[in-house]
Amino acid sequence: MSSTKSGTAASSSAPAATGRETLTIIDNRNGRQYEVPIKHDTIRAIDLRQMKVHESDFGMMSYDPAFTNTASCISKITFIDGDKGILRYRGYSIEELAEKSTYLETAYLILHGELPNEAQLKEWTYHVTHHTFIHESIKKFLDGFHYDAHPMGMLISTVAALSTFYPDAKDIFNPESRRKQTYRLLGKMPTLAAFAYRHSLGMPFIYPDNDLSYCGNFLNMLFRTTELQYHPNPTLERALDVLFILHADHEQNCSSTAMRGVGSSHVDPYSATAAATAALYGPLHGGANEQVLRMLVEIGSVNNVAAYIKRVKAGEKLLMGFGHRVYKNYDPRAKIVKRIAYEVFDVLGRNPLIDIALECERIALEDDYFVSRRLYPNVDFYTGLIYQAMGFPMTMFPVLFAIPRTSGWIAQWQEMLLDSEQKIARPRQIYLGHDLRSYIPPDRRG
Ligand code: CMC
Image (cartoon, rainbow, N blue to C red; front, side):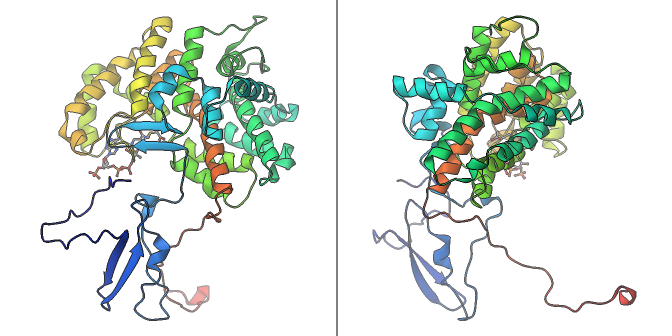
């Protein structure tokens, strides 16, 4: 594998290459030299521990807040090249999957490593479809929420509550149990999400319709009113399905890291999924599409964009939906989302906020502040516009991210469980607090 990492470039006076796959480190505190192995352009942090000044020292650690340059796992699920704007699931490009696949087929691919054959896809679809109902007690549980409760809060709580209905989920090293919980999680997430939405409207819950597709049924549970059978608009059904494909996994992002970290304690997958959903709720992660819409509404008109960008550059605001920890190029998902936006607008009418978004993008892509920091639109920049056109309130936007990401979370969780190198997640710290001191009673504290 060739290195794509940046660092201090080798100068012409650098020593000749030895061809050894090792890194030589000289500890200038004591002049000792160490040679540590390099594999996949990476050294193991634990190899630093041998570097000590005194025998009683703990040994050298690496310090990496927010894990900006630390790999915590070996994964075979998703590949991203942030510089080139490449995203692949199990080797298949996101562009090809968005064009040819369906969400359920992509979820199978992400979870199993290979695309299903016809029989496997049929069986997989059958099982996910036949695990969409939720226990009636969950409905009572939902009724306890205030009418304006945020649906993400409801989703986090209800997915965690599923663990109490399925105690067999604790058997995490049993492949049969994991398979069952996978069907249940994929099947029930849209139901929980739709019920949370209907609760906020004070509308009766609509039960799943097994004759519809994954997304068709989701639209049914959200929007059906008096009709005997709900017939989703095929363009909108397909648009949602493609958006679900785009959101299915994104390697070691904040919520997948939460899933792996919490799952590493060997808790059941519902509890771990609740933790991942909570991580996704944040405005810097899955909550960003909601924030993009709020920002576009706040900007209000194309004429106000330049003034808003000025405030962003002054550090007063973030241009929501821009920038990414990994992508230093146009997010490949954002390109596809932009195309889908126009397909949806053809059916439902143009969302007027698109003009403000386009103007933000136009100015930002020409402005040195954004260019020099390599800030480009991410997946969230245009999704909110589509969701709003489809009739979703802003609070549902992160929920629409959480449903498809569940397949990625389960795949990451399973990969972590089956990796013999993984243990309970437990980072180190650099303690810079007080040294030992004596307790002073309150009346003698100055
Ligand atoms: N608007 C204005 N400036 C920005 C933005 C932005 N959206 N994003 C980054 N910057 C600036 C940042 O202030 C910093 O400037 P300086 O070097 O002068 O201090 C520089 O760019 C580097 O940013 P960073 O915060 O160090 O980058 P990060 O990798 O820690 O953060 C991010 C990545 C996505 C959290 C951040 O770009 C951001 O807050 N974006 C807005 C929120 C957003 O759209 N989130 C959705 C991410 S995609 C969906 C997902 O994966 O969940």
